[in-house]
Amino acid sequence: FKQYNIEDNDAFYTVKPLDDGGFLAGGNASTDEVYKGWLVKTDSNGNIVWNKTYDYGYAYAIFFDIISTPDNGYAALAEVTGFGAGFWDYMLLKLDNTRNTSWAMLYGGEGNDLPRSLVNADDGGFVMTGTTNSFGAGQYDMYVIKTDSLGKSGCHEISALPQEGTLSPSVINFMPQVTSLASSTVAFTQVNN
Image 1 (cartoon, helix red, strand yellow):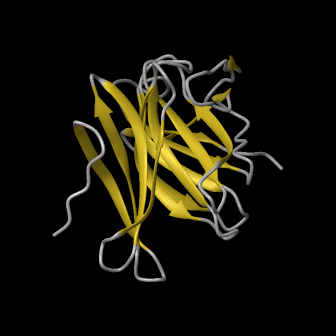
Image 2 (tube, one colour):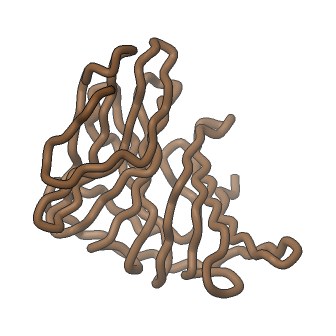
């Protein structure tokens, strides 16, 4: 049993085993209603090897997934609000092996876009899944985004490289590509090579 905390209200929403026996965990650390994204790496005994918070000032960031990448870095998927196109948007961060942000991309529309899962794609890019009410048939629909190795999807992007406490994203509007599956709708975003 291990307990971790750095703020008043902290939570992990994902944990992933690593080849070295350790773990990656992601979530948020919050105090006074300010949610900072929080990433942690532990050894096989649960001792913290490193931990880092990502504070974007007035914006909330909650990590729902983190993965190792083939270049010995990491990619992390967060739900963010306070900047972007809608109330909640996807944020994909590519981190180098020292946990510094190499690049960040935001994705979404005018509604709520709620990310939950991230995997490495065979071509070096990433695939993110979650739900959206910005696009699709109504209420909440599945939302799958495929990117290249730099986070470019060609659709629903809100380009930004968040810096600690400052953001100036520019919005890029694209029409969604929607494919119907039985009674559900899936909004797909894909890089066209």
